[in-house]
Length: 165
Image (tube, rainbow, N blue to C red; front, side):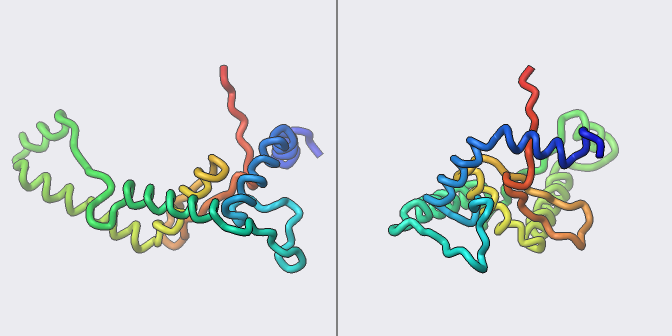
């Protein structure tokens, strides 16, 4: 087997971050154990050791819900589509008026919100925020195909090599 295959590269980078992994397991045990379980945890055999007061879990849940409501409010779009001045001038030169442009853009904003609700992405975003609070990293996969669902990849399942130079 070639030494530069994906598995050997993953194992090499995974072994470099073992001290971080131990810290992430500790943080997860104190807050939400499902975020970063012990690598050898078997849900059918092992019993979950919980913090007796669940204070960490309450803090993470409260903070993640606050952040979710601040970023993605239910009453207003979480983003605004706007055109740059050059493109807006080109469209106005072709006969589009400013009010019509704003109407078309707001329709597209609402379509994006409907798509977000259809994909049930709010649950995934809360999961992402909780991962960021507890371990500081995760990946949100947003598929291009409409029949696929988005999902969150835990930091246990990927490694990143950062070239700082």
